[in-house]
Image (cartoon, rainbow, N blue to C red; front, side, top):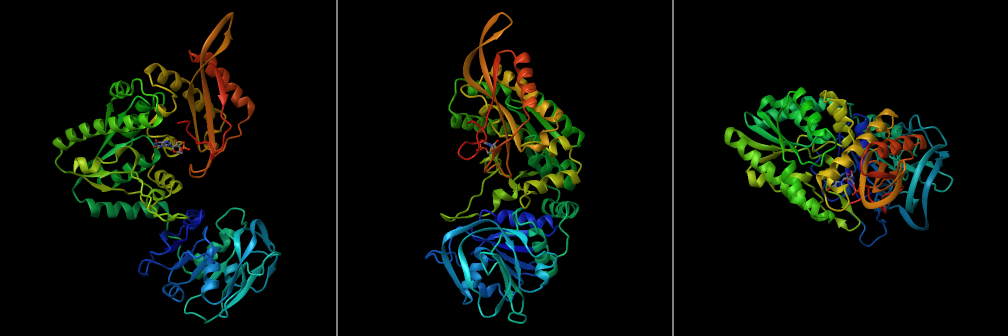
Length: 514
Ligand code: XMP
């Protein structure tokens, strides 16, 4: 595998994903927490950083532990840091170089730049510039702006080669970026393309069997990709020793509870469906504040889940574990400008549950990115309708009904949402967007239907393109699609006489309205 030292760049996760796309496993660790270099680690990458190497509080790592031990690749800050620490010169420029550049000057041929043509477009984003490289190094390529776009250690200078690049190969604007990464990972570090969904399934199933033995596992399902794929993997490993609970909180999409429960049964999962709609509606009565709603929905979920879990535990004394669909972005210790920080988010709805139920946690997807979860799901033959499903918030339609929640409003929104989603599929747009949904607004406006004046509610349509939900761009839909959705909703959903489309990006807006 490849070890990536994170110096806090916004692109660190992207480097890891790109390497995994080459079917090589990669793992991110904070710059100051380098593990012992065992045989599995074949190469090391130093990431970029929002810091400057000239900063007083620049982030430091012990290069002696890395250079010479394994092939090393420094990217951006990583390249500047190596230059500076080994005796080169890095200068703070007044102007950031940001955007596209070309490797217009290739100084020598090297396996690292094999198949990268002269003039190849690369993506630059740096404030500091490497003015002189250290003595033990030599230049590989430059752009019109900078002499040092790529450099490497001279033959024999260290026991293992060191490569450094100022540009970002992980960003798609670096057109031959994947080639550069492949050259480093496969040819220089010697990694084999062994990281595949099939291999992951095989290894994980085996290690789950070893870890769990004859113990039974309890798992809460949400209908989403992560929990479903996690359950499917556990089922593959321990069969009917997995027991699942799927709660209808009354805030799911139209017919979702029945459809998803049906798919789960088809997949052979032992699943208990719990209709808790009334309990949720009762507790949510009169509550309009978004955070308050989240709290109530979370609390009621835990109460319902705990009650059902205790019933199951009573019947089945072998339940020792709680399965969770936690994925890699939730467990990476992220390095931020505000200093290294640990952001470990537990799976939304079940915080506190393992202690209450006295269960240990098993998280079979904790090393996977979302796109890998989907590939593993496909490998496990999880229905495509679930694998390719948009993200859906834990509190469901509860945070898409602005103001207080009533069963009647839920019904209205479910109808409108179903029309929207069905048309997205019909127009072939569903897989083009990251997430889509409808929001019921607490405003009434005047309309006219036949000869009658109406005074009814408004629905907002939301759809975004995003990579991870952290930033998002509103989706540019064709007007005829929007027209179809609008008239179908207004003609079919009683109580709605107006449809609007949300054209806000995140930031400064958010994806959800609450
Ligand atoms: P925002 O609205 O913060 O949403 O831009 C980013 C992503 O997170 C989802 N989201 C939630 N998911 N519980 C969840 O499980 C929540 O309370 C919650 N709030 C937002 C949202 O749907 C989007 O995918």
